[in-house]
Length: 257
Image 1: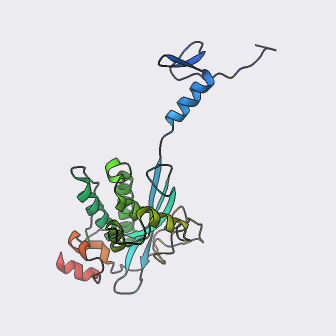
Image 2 (image 1 turned 180 degrees about the vertical axis):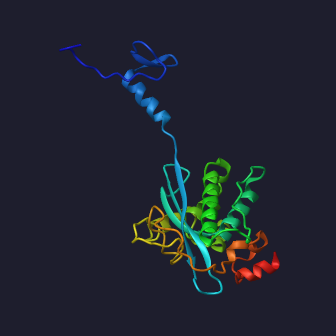
């Protein structure tokens, strides 16, 4: 009304007509309080996980392999650190899935992308397909309450402990607890997500424990000159038990398929 008092009214969804309050059982709250309660009730926990920035480690050597950056940001109380960034290779994903399945009982664990060595297409297409598959795997895992309760998953996502170190921590044979290991990594330089200079290659050289920076993949496509002998391309589950054993080259894997 012209010249009158203008009042902003918060009207709950699907309610028509004049609203003077929000009823909750036998109690009635002022409208402003009721709206605040609705907003708090609607607030949900969100977890964003990205698998990106594939890099060749030990490039040019007989045991070169590809690892991936895992960036996680969350407001969920289930996680110790709200932001984390680690690098993991494919065989570590294989190990993680096996451990999750062992502890989850009858709860199904999402599948990993295929391990087929005979991929029709370019190397960077293979890596991109695997990256997408690994991200889809983790996205499904972190949405499963049962799988999310496994401490091994949290150490995998939020610390740079190796598989033997994670297993030692779970057995109580580590100087740090699960929470302490995650917090120690979060407070280290590698635990913080920082920006880095541009990179024009799909797969770039990098230090496994010091290349966690950047929120988004800075990579282009079509930069690979040859198909390297990456041992993770055709790794079978039976090889997970001996992660410290010398890695096989691609031709050797072809002979054992």
